[in-house]
Amino acid sequence: MSWLALLDYASVLVFALTGALVASRAQLDLVGFAFIASLTAVGGGTVRDLLLNRDPVFWVGQPDYILIAVAAAVLVFFTAHLVESRYNWLIWLDSFALSIAVAAGSATALSLGQSGVVVVLMGISTGCLGGLMRDVVCNEVPLVLKQGELYVSCAFAGALTAVAASRLGLDDLAVLASCALVCWALRAGSLLFGWKLPVYKSRPPRV
Image 1 (tube, rainbow, N blue to C red):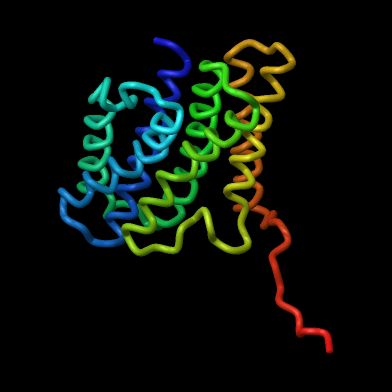
Image 2: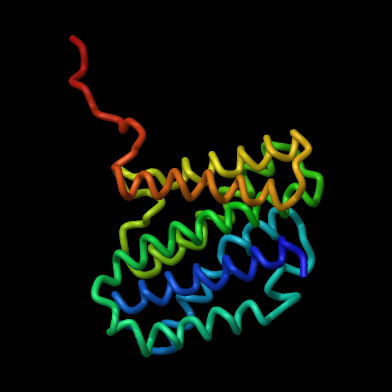
């Protein structure tokens, strides 16, 4: 199995766990858990594959991705009550899922010989869109838009690192590892130390 396939499997599993945790906060039934977990797990990768014109979309060609997401949903359904702070688990699992998915999206675009701009955009899309769908459907404030935290910028930095590492001639594993590490380090720093970008503040109009 290739590193790219392993990344896709890991991304699906961890994002599915975050989707199921959000479903638990929304107090959905088991079918709701499975739906939200699957939507979160494959949402970003689906958009990536459609934009890159990959046929078939990764989970259509290998439906076991959906089975992994459903298994994760069932696991969380029966164990979520044991977790003291589901939100803390959610944001940290999501940080790992983000970094893995950004690496997977960037690597997929690189493997197809896409330009650096497209590689960065595919990394961001794969990393961010599944979580965005999850939060919107469950009526949560999307983590990707939460004020005072780095999120999309982490995905951007990670994908840009993948492009730079590839241009430097690093091997596939080094490209993936550097991408995921940069993305996760920035996201973890935002959560632990409050790293953030300046936000827009309105000013009174000049007379």
